[in-house]
Image (cartoon, rainbow, N blue to C red; front, side, top):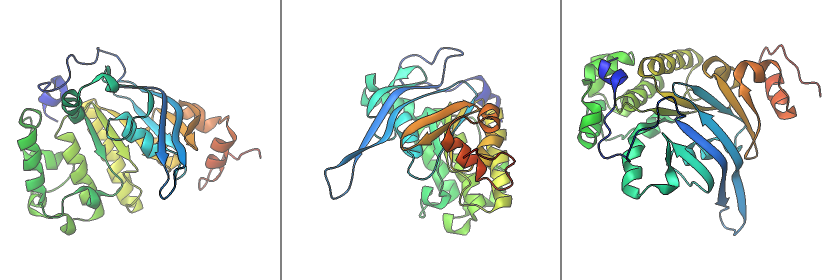
Length: 280
C-alpha cells in the first residue's frame, strides 16, 4: 500500500487536533441506546450500559445472536446512528461535543463494510464512477492511490472498474466495498457481518483480505459477527452481547478457552466441531 497511507492522513475539515499517539481509537463508556417499537409507544433498550475500547491497530470483535444489539452499538459508536446516553470518544473527540460540521469532518476516518455488499453499492454507478464520486467529495484523502492500484490491492482485475454491481459476484462486490473503505484512509474500519452472505471459500478470502488491508494501513477494526469461529480467527479481543449488554469480554483466547458466562458457554458449545462443551 502507498507510503502516503502509512505516514499520514489529511485532516482538513476535521475536528481540531488528532487523537494522541498511542491513545485509543474508540472509547465507549456506559452507552445506552433506546428504540421505540413500531406501532406502539413502548421503548426498549437495544444497548444497555456498554463500555468498550479499541486501541490503535487493534481488532475487537462483538458477538451475539440476532437482536443482541451488536449493530446498534457499532452505528452509535461511529456517529452513524443514535448515540443515546453515555460517552463516545472517537479518535479522542467526544462525539457529543462536536458540531455538525466537525462531525462531518471526522466521519471519513471511519468506514463501514456492511453485510450486504450489493445493497451498499449504487446500482446506477459503475465501480469507476463510484470511486470517482468519492474522489470528488474527498480529493485530499483519496489522491494517494489510483483506481487500478487500489483494485489490485483488493485482488480485483482492472476490468472490474467498468462493471456495475449486478455484474459482480458477492465476493467481488464485497472486495469493491473494501476498496471504497480503504481509499478513504480510515483510522477505524467497522466490519458488520462482512462475510455472512458469502460462500465459505469466498469468506476465507475476504477475511484474509481484511486482515492484510488492516496490517498494511494500521487501521483499527470493530468486527461485528455471530460467527464465533470467524471472530476467533480475526480478533485480538472479543465482547459477547446478550439483550443489549456485554456479558463477557476479554482477550479472544481467554474467552474462547475459558468462558465464564453461561451464554458464552452455550454459544461455544453450539460451534461445529467444538471441543469445549458447556457445563449446563
